[in-house]
Amino acid sequence: MTHEEQIAREHELDEAASAAAAELIAACHALGWGGDFAEDAAIDRLLRAAEDAGIPTRRTAPPKVSSAASRKKLPRSLIRMVWDRNGWECQRCGTHRDLTIDHITSLASGGTDDMDNLQTLCKSCNSSKGAR
Image (tube, rainbow, N blue to C red):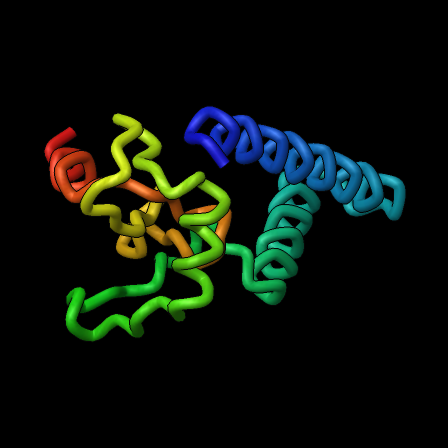
């Protein structure tokens, strides 16, 4: 998934969450729960449901990653699938040399080891990525 696609997906999820919150607020009003209390309760219920489902919210901190040394290594099969998907080339410059696996959204920023968050970069592009 490209960075632009990821941003578009996050926007879609934000819109879906906003629509769900609006429906929940409308239901609260229909039950006679009026005013700010209803909106606060609806938002709190929506956030709690998201957190229970494992979806990070602004109330939950991203998982802490103490250091690269404490991380589990990616399975070789996953690395192979990412390289195969990306045509065994760097997604920034196109080279086929010194390939690495890069997290599009870093683990420290709440990214995951899911295939959609991984891309193939050469060592040079991967090391320059951190300087952006």
